[in-house]
Image (cartoon, rainbow, N blue to C red; front, top):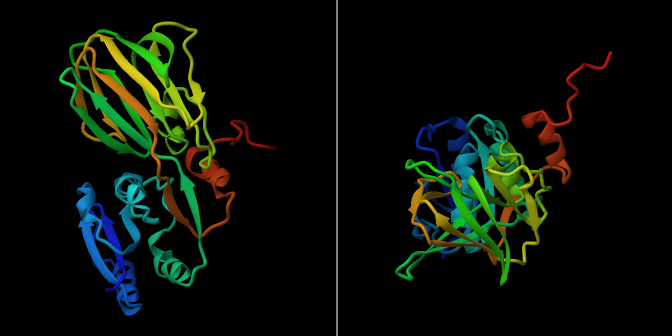
Length: 280
């Protein structure tokens, strides 16, 4: 039975772009079966014997692919056909050369922590989701501050009143968490980052927890919304319990560039460390 390479694409991507057609031809010519699907599908899309998942789009498409690939232990290679491309590895012009390097074994795997999120309601039913960047709990359309009880393993950490909070991975530390005032974590860091959103106290600040701990969050006032990686939000009722932990499996991202590329990307894509006043 042939090994497979999956291609996950943004619906707006032209799949007949010369670079994509050439990549498809290379993979088939190298003995691989290729399967293709739009982003946002279920885990059943990921066929057995998939050796690599290729994403064609921007960072959102890569996140969608990561939620499929990481729990299955399948490496992920992102191609930037979007705008920012902070997480992706290749531009279209380098796709063929990148695949040739992968097939020849000239690559490294960069492992990143992902999230396992569980929501338990009043009826005792539990729903689970996988996240790559963050899980966000925020107040709903009804308005009013949320009161959130925060625990770590069996220990109660505190109670905060806020518009919400988020728990992010190192990957997510450069996304919503950064905009909310959290610190940047280097991608290999396995810690979890808790960032309050507009807290009703100046003393409530972000806090970093070791990835081996499980965070528990419970709403005791007002209903809210929960969203993982910016996907469609689900409603939270007062008393719902949310548990967030590092997933037992880590995301494996195929890297063809040098190991310290992250710091260059911070400058290039996010403008970090660039002086406001040019050097004379």
